[in-house]
Each structure stands twice: as C-alpha cells, then as structure tokens.
Length: 250
Image 1 (spheres, one colour):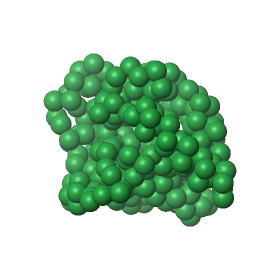
Image 2 (cartoon, helix red, strand yellow):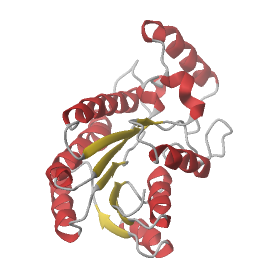
Image 3 (cartoon, one colour):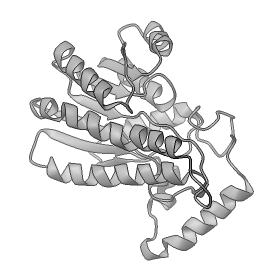
C-alpha cells in the first residue's frame, strides 16, 4: 500500500479521485489520467504531488502515447488501476444508438484491455506489480436499464479472471474492485439513500486492497455477488423489478 508508483485512469472524479487521494495520502507516487485538463489540474492543485496526464481511454493511439510516456517518465511504475468508465442508460427492448454503444464498449472494456496490454511487459519487469480492474456489482447482477454497461463490466470481470491465471507465475498480481452503487457523478449524484457514500466506499475498499484478496467488494453487496448460479434468473428479475419501481436518478 506504500512505496508504489500508481497510474489511475479516470482519476479526476468519483471513485478514481477517491482512490488517487487515498493512495497519495499513504505516500505513493500517483499519476491520474482524464480527458479534461482543467479537472486534472484541479486534483493536482488540491493534492500537491499528484500528477495529471490527458488521456482519451477510448482512443487506441492515445492509449499507446500515454503508456509510452509513463514508461519513459516514471520507470518505477508498478501499479495500474483501470478505473475510467461511463454509464449511459439504454433500452435493450428497443433500438440501440450504435455510436453510444461503441463509445461505451471502447471506454469500459477495450480501453482497459489496451492500457493493460501497453504496460504489461513493463509491469512484469518490476519486482512486484499490481493491476486493478474496477468492474461493478452489475458484472454479476445486470441492471436492465444499463444493459450494455452491465455487459462491459461482466466482460471485464471475465478478462480479469483469465489474466490473473495467465500471470500466476509472474511478479504481477491482478485484483478486481466491484463497487456497489456509489454516490458519484457516474450516476447523477443525488444523495439517494440507496447509494453508498463515496468516502465510506473508499475506506472499506482500501482495507480490502491491503489484503491479498483477488476480488475486493464491500460487504453490502455480498448477496448480489453470490449470484446463485442456475437460480440467477429469479434474482435478476426481482432485482430489476425493484429498480424499475424505484428508478435511478437520471
């Protein structure tokens, strides 16, 4: 938890910023990425020592550019946190906006895979390194109102499982964070009592990351994480019926 050089995508707000500031307070070197320079500068000003780099995670060329710069400027880099993500609503029972769909998949799934691929050989050269993928409880119990988002998180979870196995004999370990609904701007920040406060989520998650757990999730989502296999249809239907009766803020 200390003495690392950590790169966090989507580090200008929400969970990404919360993790960046928590690791910064522990004395790590933290570099955050985001699309908007003004927000990067805001975080850096509030947390002297944190560095920002502009990145469009959905652009493969930009991913390659940033990876090369990180390796050059921060040769001690040993932690990658794939956190950047977007969550537009959709309707799987109707027509899908193809442009929105592709942006979502490129941001939530393709981007993290390419970012990891671009840094993996560098990470394997370190004496100890970690890749952390930020997925979601919706990787296990999809929210029908965000079907594509849920699918990208399920896919990233699956990718993390395979990557962890393939890296088992290297110095790189793979961890996964699976957040619940956290009160951030990913979904309109509203103070909804069903959403976990960001500070509480970060505190519990950092405790989990102190361990060697392959997957870190807050206790509040354990029932949903333990999705009951062949009986999942009833759970998913009842979960989504409840959410339709009490929809998320838009």
